[in-house]
Image (cartoon, rainbow, N blue to C red):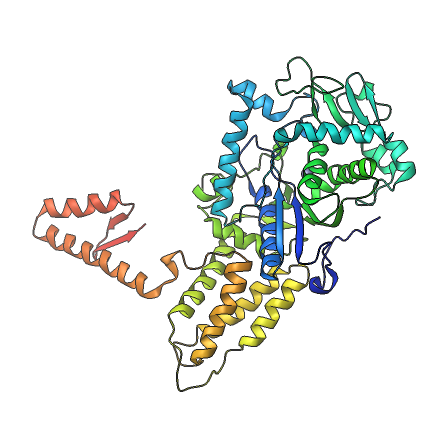
Length: 491
Ligand code: ZN
């Protein structure tokens, strides 16, 4: 029986991959029947940072993140209908059109957040044969039963031989108390038995032939199957959101033990949840904000649009195991923080190393050590950010001559920033020109100059020139207001 770790403190010492130099990592991906929201961004970014960190440490990583595109009944239990199938029925689309549409949009959003693509992105619908074989193994080992064309895990029998609930710290009694009355209750021996294969009802449009019925696999089955198919019967890391521990990951452990006789996962890692103004995100609260809405600012809870790097920075400012509470104010604060980082990084790229003077006022090896220790301590990204902020403060004093830096040290400082801010935290710091003082000055100067010419034209009653400047600037997104003393403008 493998041990279970829920955190990786002193990562470099305690993390022992099953195969030296190689890491197999599986993360539960999205169910693709709607746009990605803040709740999707957190696991994607958390495990992206882990992936980047493992690569930085020199591991060869096979990162598998699945696409759930069949049989997700969990939250729509009353209707007993797959959400993708439901969307397809309502919009008169082929289910795979729904899947492709939202998969493409998910990829677009992940690319915007600078989340690296996984090594393999398997779809549940592409692994039906493997899932049927996995269910058959569990039946052969006597831990499942067939009932009315569906196959259920025999949880009571399983719990006699294996510690069911070990990941979530639950026992069977707790689980009975928590189990809701779900679809197919009558055919199960116990309420806590979960479906490995479900017979499709006549209106269910996504179904496949199997030895038991025309139907579809239970939700938990895909991750057991695809994880072991691509990473081996045992692999290193399995990640996902905290809300997946039970029932999803507990069920995965049970399926692996039941089919293979042992657990598959060596380290479990879970990111905590995001709340919105203290409330859980959920349909009933009507507080889902999609990433697209964040980027465009089109949601009543948002004061303005927020760029993808602000979202990424906001998430990384908290440790992945702490909760994060979203509010527009918190994002505005994150935006300011990110801007400070951008300014410092851009200054760092522009500053000239001093050939004569030695380095003064900048602690480069201290920065490297702090960043390395923070990442080693269970991916403590807020500590990395704090160290970079301290460094930013010092960098900002170089132009005033309060700090000086030698050429060799400048090279090293740039390298430390690139390693931790760009490569590991995955922040794009070079992009926005906002941080560039001289660029901003030149831009403001040019607009003031144009509006000055317009003012002159107005005085001379040259309405053609005056209107042309006003209209074309307005078309570019400027707001121009004439005042007593001249003009004001904003974007
Ligand atoms: Zn999963």
